Length: 374
Image 1 (spheres, rainbow, N blue to C red):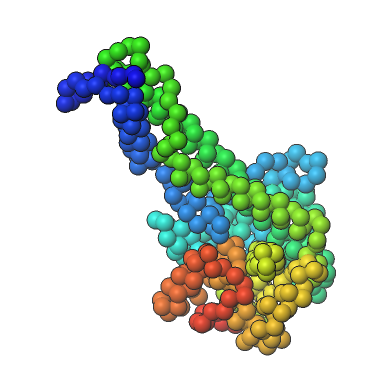
Image 2: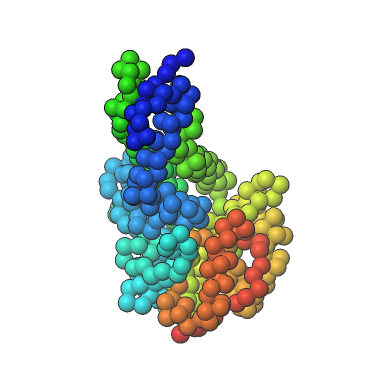
C-alpha cells in the first residue's frame, strides 16, 4: 500500500492511501466551501433557484433570436400584459408591486413597468406586432375571438420563454460549478503536492464520489431536467391539444391586480392546464380562463362548480384564489397594497410562498381585493 509523507504544522507524519484520500477530500471541501461563501455561485444557487418552480429572476434576458419560424431578428422586450392598455392603470410613477425574493424570503417588491413587469424578449418587433396587435389597444369596443386567441398565445409564449430561460440559466450555473470545482481541485492538489515528501507519489488528478457540491449540483440538474420535461409538455399542450375553450367576463369595474399565466392541477397524475388572465383596463376588467376541450368537464367539476361567474362577489373570490394559486406573473397597485391591513398582506405572502401546495382548486379563508378600489 502506498504511503504518503506529509509535512504540516504538527510536523512530519505518514498516511496510508485511504487516510491521504480522506485528508485531500477534507481540504478540497474546505476550499470549495470558502469559495462559495466568498461569492462563487452563491447568489445564483441560493437565491435564483431557492423557489425555482414559481419564481425566476425578473431581469429579462433574451434566449436567442426571434422565436418566429425562420426569423433571425433580435427579440424586443414585449409585455405579456400590455403596458399602455393595462399596467399603466395600476402603476404609481411607473412602478407596480410583485412578489419578489429578498434574502431568501418572499416579499412584495416594486418593479418598473417599462422594462421589467411582465416583460419577455421572445419575438422581434415585426412578429410581436403581427401576432398581438389586438392586445395593446387602449380604447376598446367589442372583445372579439381574435383578441382572446392572441391573449392565449401570448400567455403561453411567455411560459415558453420562462422555461427556456430557466434551462439556459441552469446550464450556465452548472458550467460555472464544474469549472469552479476543477479550478479549486487543481489548486488543492498543487498545495498537497508541495507538502508530500515522496515525489513519485505526487497527485496528478483525483476523483471522489463525495464531490462537495454534489447536493447543489444535483438540485440544479434535477430542476434542469424538470424544466425540459415541462417545456416538452407545454409544447404538446400548445401544438396538439389547443386551449380553445374560453370563458370570459367583462366587468364594468376595475381591480388593483393584473396577472397572466398558466396554472395547473393534477387528476390521477394527469396534468390539467388552465390559461388565466386578469386585465384591469381604465374603466373595466377583463377576466378569462382557457383550456382544452378534453379538460373542459374536469375543470368545470373541479373548479368552476364552486363559483358563480355571473356574480361579481363570487367572481372576485375566484380571482383572489388565482392571485394566490395561479401564476408568478402578477402585479399589484402599490397604493392599494400599502393600504391593506398588514395581517392580510402578510397572510397573502405566506400563502403565495407555499409553492408545494399551489393548486387553483384550493380555497382561501381571507379576502383582500376590491372592485372599483380607487
